[in-house]
Each structure stands twice: as structure tokens, then as C-alpha cells.
Image (cartoon, rainbow, N blue to C red):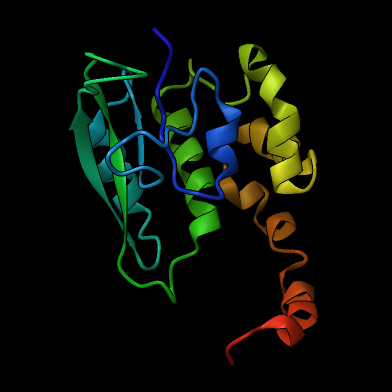
Length: 165
């Protein structure tokens, strides 16, 4: 069976992993990561042990009644944003991939069967550098500086377009 992995919006992770994808038909789309091969409790523990600011993870078990994954027991985590000012949402997808790689090294995100999706992942990330650097060790720290390299310049340039101060 294909893997179901739902993600929150604006996540390149949802684009990346076929048969993993972004499932808008789910009851809580863009808030969870789930697949038939994930142990929900282990993943939630590992994610919560990272102590990501403003975010907590809840183990999830689901059995879709229709569409993709129908009748399958899927497990994963639901992302709970507790403090929007502290939460760094774009990091979550990489920490999820990091912890999945540690738990399931036989299921790498950037494997040959997912190669057809690399181009879209690279476009969403703005470069192939994120994928190439991250896939060496599957550690967010390996790409963190590169991921944030343009943030301050973007904030300065975009400020004039803000509707609310």
C-alpha cells in the first residue's frame, strides 16, 4: 500500500514523499504526519523531547473511511501550536524527517523512488541545496544556517507591504 503522510500547509515535506502526500480530505488536514509504518508513541516522544518552542506533538491513530489509506491503521503525530510567536513552523517538517530517519533508517525521505518529486520540493525550498545538504545526515542543524540565510533581508524588504503594523 502507498504511504499516507499528511502535513500542514506550506510544507515542502507534503510535496516530497510519494507515495507520501498532502491529504486535504483528512478531518484535520495539514496538522498531522501519519503512515502505516510509524509508531505514534515513539515519534511523539522523540518530537516532544526536541522541546521545539511553542509546539507539542500528540500521538495519533487513525483509520480512514474513504479515499487514500481507506481501512488501513495509520499512526503518527498531530502538531499542536501552543505559541504562534515562538513556533518555527518551517522547521517542523525537517525535524519530523530527522526523527523518522533515526527511527526508520530503511525509509529515507530522499530515496530513488521519490526522485520524481525532488524538483517540486526544491522549488518550494528555493534551491536544491536544502535537499542535498539535509539528505547527507538527515539533521536539521546541517541546513539551519542555509535555511535562514535570507530571512532578515526578506523581513526588511517585505515590511513596506505589511497591511498591519
